[in-house]
Amino acid sequence: MSNFWITLAIFLALISMPLNSIALLLLAALLVLLVSVTRWWANYCLVRVSYQHELSSYRAFTGDELVLTTELTNNKFLPMPWVQVSAEMSAYAAPNQGHIVIAPDQDRILLNSLMSLGWYHRIVRRYSITCERRGHFYLGPVKIRSGDLFGMFSREMRKERDQTLAVYPKVLPLSFFRLPAKQPYGNVRLQRSLLDDVTRPMGSREYAVGDSFRYIHWKSSARTGNLQTRVFDASTTPNFVLFYGVRTVEPPLQGSLPQLLELGVLTVTALANYALEQGQAVGVYVNQTSRLTSRLLQVPTSSNPDQLTQILEVMAQVHPDVSIPLTQLISDRSKTLPWGATIIAVTAVVDEGTLALLTRMRRAGRSVALVTIGHSGEIPVEGIPTYRVSDASNWQTMGEVLLQ
Image (tube, rainbow, N blue to C red):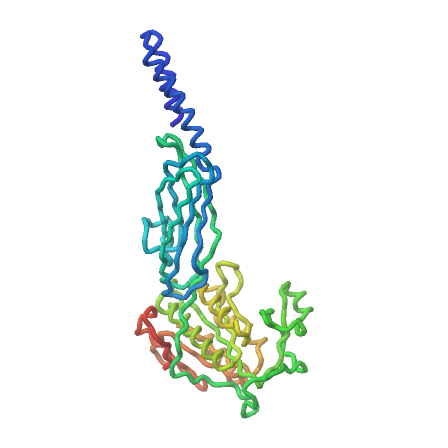
């Protein structure tokens, strides 16, 4: 653009000499002056310009409403006749007002704003946001574009992703719950043990917030590279460990059914919350890795006050992709669990490998249970308590999780 105006000014100056035209020469001089001023204006238009955005909360549940506040400030004497702000965000946590367009990524939207700022001027705008779906959502990137008064030149600055909104699944009440508790000696003598039996170590697991440093397994920590905690045989402590298989279509087909996936998330969350309310230790393992950390989605067994929050953090990250088979996950993790723990498999696809593993564990004396999501057929398993959660109701309008 600048080359065009400079070329035009030179052309007018050249033809003004044979024509002896003062007017053309003055016009050429004005064009040169205009190009110089507008280019200088564009070069400094975004200097000392700041943009901030923040949410009223960075933790929410599905269906909650938040407030997004944006602030654009011009901290210099030079005014900004026009500023275009394009903020990218998730389509599942989008503002209810403003000019919104679809981003190249189908799960993202662009919140566009066009405004003008005087010298030392600040503009604050607020938008209401409805959290339509669980997940971890980024705010940004944000592109800010401005230029001179005539639009001849422009500059652009970019603000990268800097904040994350975590939307948790709803915690629904559980109805008709009757999962078995492991009773290694006929009856559980205590509803909850006050102290671990440190004379009966059962292995190790990853360290969880709230674990005592006295029980750190240093050799295992050095071998794995992650802090490990000793696991003791707590046969008098009812422990419930939930294994969630995210596959929702029968192999070899690929893809995912959102209704079954979300229904499974709600079921696991409801089971964990119910057990914690009963004062029992709960753990959750999902057969996939996190898209945020590339680590297995898991919450080691604990009854800490913040255990439900940690479980919600993990369940908010559940996605359709399977990382390891559910059978392998149960087999690997069950080796470090107390013998008295009740192992509960939650899945929409009940494969023969999982049934065979649960059967072997049952025959070995372990307490196991199976919860199927939307599965309407018969499960040919003897001695394994089996429950079903119907997919007849939309997961978005459910008021409770009903075990049948």
